[in-house]
Each structure stands twice: as structure tokens, then as C-alpha cells.
Image (cartoon, rainbow, N blue to C red; front, side, top):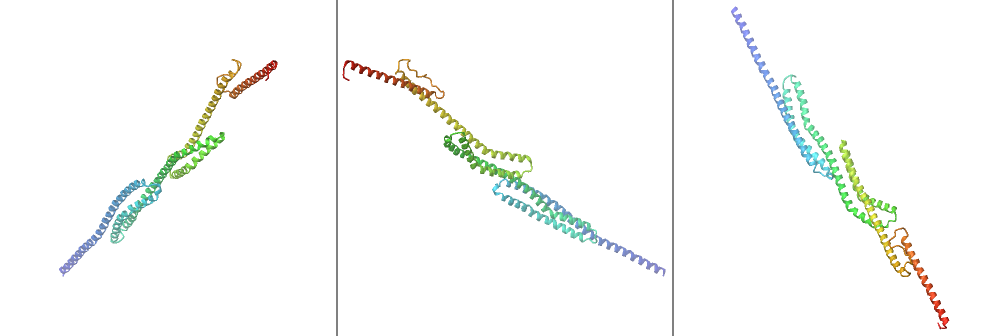
Length: 366
């Protein structure tokens, strides 16, 4: 009976041992799938992180390439085609965003799979990991938008710089065209001055003529210079540093000097032509004086023959330039001629009186 009891007890212990082994095996087998699920989730997470890093690098490099290409294209756009810059920016953003969105869509899917796999693990042991991956997923989804915004900001700066430079180019071009127009039109102004200057009687008339010339310069070149100044003002508003503002101040001064330069040319031409006219008038007076003097010399020569040598004073042979000298000389010569005439008349009267007396004394008929 004891043997029976001992045998029965051993059977119970054997069954308990076998049962414990079975439970251990079951526990081991049940734990192994759980660990495999988490490992799979970790593997998916690692794949997602790696893909995210690669896509981030590719998107960043793509953004830099687009920025460089777009910057070069900006320089080819004229100011009058400024709407093309908006189109260029829109195209650049689309070119960057669309492929980035596709790439990060794949990253998104991997993160979702990793989260789902973590959720298969029993209990809440992986909840912190799920929360972490969820935050990473959200950041990853924003990456295309981040680089899109970054590119937009950079392109906006380029657009602003392009607009400033385009405005400066337009301003310089308008000044050059205006300068060329004035260079041709100044000949028209000079022709007008040539016609009107001889009509000027005094300094006031000449000043009025100069003002008219200035007004002609303003009407021809003023509108163009004002357009250029407006371009320069807009460009200056886009400047952030004082150095560029000072450069534009210089361009504005040069534009204004264009009108000043042609006005000065009007002044110089009027003064030059007036000097020539005055010199010509002075020469005419000199010629007239010489003519009168030559006439007086001829008269003097004839007059000297009317009187005995040294009896008639007709003045010096040199030209006298004292005021009224020529008139005085001619009046003197006229007076000598009158004296000669009066003398001849007196002699003729005496002659006739003597002849009449002789005839009377001799009783001769007249």
C-alpha cells in the first residue's frame, strides 16, 4: 500500500513537472511572437527614418538647383514683363513640391505601418514609442511644405532684387534715350536762337530768349527724366542698405544733370552768338569809320586845291576814334568848302563889277 502511495505520489509529481515544463514552453512560445512584432515595428521605423533622411537630402538639393536655375532666368526678364516673375516662382514651387510630396508620401506610409505594428503588441508597453513615431510622422509630413516655404522666401528675395535692378536698368535706359533726343533737338533750339537773337534790343530780350530755350529743353526732355526719376524712386524704396540708396541718389542727380547740361548749352550758345554779333557790329562800325575817313581824305585833297598851299586846314590824315570825331571832320571840311564857295562868289562879283565899270568908262555897250 505504501508502495502504492509512493508510486501515486511520484505520478503526481511527474505530472506536475511535465505540466510546468509544458507551461514554460507555452509561455516561451507565446512570448516569441510578441517580440517578433516589436522587432518588425522597429525595422519599419528604421526604414522610415532612413527614407525620410534620404528624401530630405534630395529635396534640399533639388531646392538649391531650382533656386540657382530660377535666379539665372530672372536676369532674362525685362521690367515690362514683370508678371513672368510670378509665373516663374509658381513653376519653381510646383517643380519642388510635387515630387517631394510623392517621396514623403512613401515615408508617411512606412511610419503608419510602424505605428500599426507597434499597436499589435499586447498591452501599452509600446505606447510611448507610438507617440514618438506619431510626432515624427507629423514633422515628416511637413517637410515638403517647409522646403516649399523656404524656396518661396528665397525666390521672393530674388524677385525683389530683380525688380530693383530692372527699375534701375529702365531708368538708365530712359535717361539715355532722352539724352539722345535732346542731342538732336538742341540743334533745333540753336536754329531758333539764331533767328531770334538779332531781334534782341537789350539784355532783357536776351534773358527772355534764354528762358525760352530752357523751356524748350524742359518740354522735350522733362517727361523722360521724370519717368526715369520715378523708376529710381521705386528702386530706392526696395533698398535696405544706405550704400545702395546713395548709389541711386547719384543716378537721380545724373538724370537731373542731363537737363541742366543742355540748358547750359543754350546759355553758352546765346552768349557765344551774341559776342559774335557784337564783334561783327563793332567791325561794321570800324569799316564805316574807315569809309568816312577815306571820303574825308579825298575831300581834303580836293579842298586843298581850292586854296593856296597851307591856306586850308582839313585835319590829320589818321583815323580819329573819338566820339563825334568823324562827324566833326566832315563838318570842318564842309565849312572849308563853304568858305571856298563864298570866296569864289565874292571874287566873281568883284570881277563882274570891275568889268561893268570898265565898260562904262570906255562907253562900251554891255
